[in-house]
Amino acid sequence: MNQDLSIFHLILNASLVVQLVILLLMVVSVSSWAAIFRKLFSLKRVAALNDKFEREFWSGTSLNDLFAAAAQNARAAGPMERIFASGMREYQKLREKRISDASTLLDGARRAMRASFQREIDAVETNLSFLASVGSVSPYVGLLGTVWGIMHAFTGLASLQQVTLATVAPGIAEALVATAIGLFAAIPAVVAYNRFARDIDRVAIKLETFIEEFSNILQRNVGAQSASGR
Image (cartoon, one colour):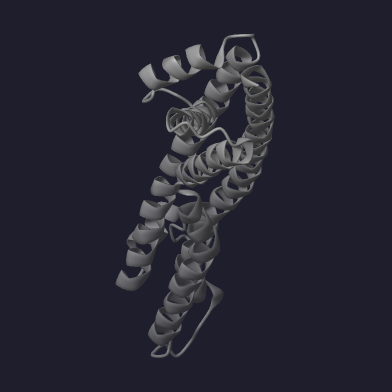
């Protein structure tokens, strides 16, 4: 019972298949943590940019000034600002074509904003499917390594005349390390996925609310312009 059963020693003495499984899980775990931190900073940036533009939008600044600023700041703009720019751009294009029908103007602007909204949500959801895959697949990959390690351990014990706990324990421990590392990779990915999915839902609701509010403003503007043109 004086054998070294530390995790590092167990990995070094595991079979080649188990070592490959552990290596794969460690690479996946590192990639998962990198994706988690990137997504965390990305969502914080999106929330900050949306809040900043929303304050500017409701501060009383004219729509034309906001659109000009959004056009100049296209690369650094947040999702809400890009959605606003898409709707305003389509609205102005239709006005330049001398289209005065209110429903046509509003439908065009709304379609442009909905298309931009879908692009923004797709961009925000980047790497989310990777985290879901890591969370669902890693335990099974670890279990595969465990099953293979146990088979390898019992195959080695078949030639022994006397089997004791001291001879069985190292092989079983080596195999179980793969399951432990699989869970180590899966648990943070699942927790992060659930957290990010909830945050993205909040972002989507906020953007949809903005689209409705901006559509109402455009509708009032069209009504006012129609009334003044009579």
